[in-house]
Length: 381
Image (cartoon, rainbow, N blue to C red; front, side, top):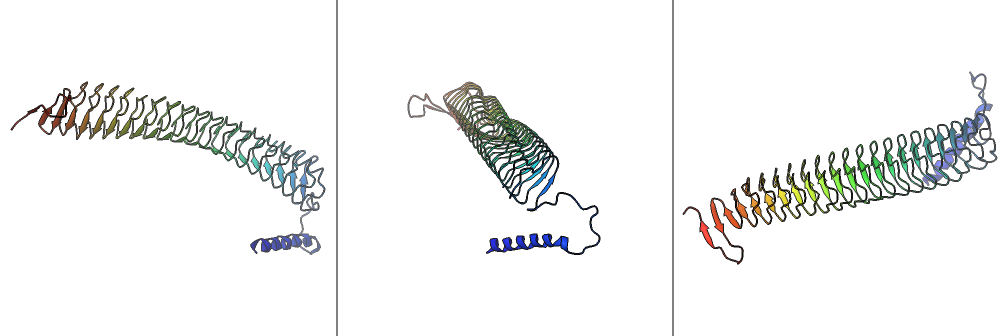
């Protein structure tokens, strides 16, 4: 019903304008405008709309604008060479050579010099900015806003690029979103990536399902998969690592190939290149490089750990001075802070130290860890 009403209103409107010349109106435009052609057509410029036959609602302004269009409808070309080869419907081109080579593509919008210039049969694309979606031929449902946005895209679909050089090198990658100057700049075939921030996911080529929010986030990623980075320079050096989560300025910034790490907090896991670590808190596991399977929760927990593995520290400064010790557990503020290279310690509310020792408060339980028993009890009565 709504469609029928709209159609009736359109017809009435056109009839009204058609009767206007017969109505006595004062004053009239003098001299009368040229280009008053049948079929609601406007043409201005050398050979603009020169081939039009039955097409309606077209506007061609500029040298050879909409030159080959004959039966196509509702196109607008403003600028030299705009839509010159077009035979499709409902395209809008503003700017010299915008949609220049479009033939059967429909419902495209190109604003800017050479925007969508090579588009042939691609539909429903939007390009705003000089050279935006420049190379697109058959890709559909793409949006490029900004100088050179989606410049090299040819057949990639449903991509969104906002910012100069965003998704610049994308060719066949699909369902990517890039917002910011040079965001996803190097992406070629990667799909389902989201980059928000200048240079976010800058070097990504074939990596999929990555999300980067923040300047330089995941900037070096090439083929890593399913990474999430939120914060300036988060996961900035990652190249091939997968399934990492970094939240905070510089979180996991040095990681290159490590996978399945989670870092929450500014500079957490800042130096790490290993896998399966969890850091939650400012500079948690800050110095970790090759240690695996560590968990540090709290400000500067496991701060100086470099290669120690399988450690668990919960609390501010817990196991903060451990460097290469492994299989340690520390619970509480400053727990295990005296542990540097020792292994197999459990420190609960105690600074700890040594190796193969259990400290609970101001008590110490020492074990050989060769059997399931406590060997001695040390401490005050």
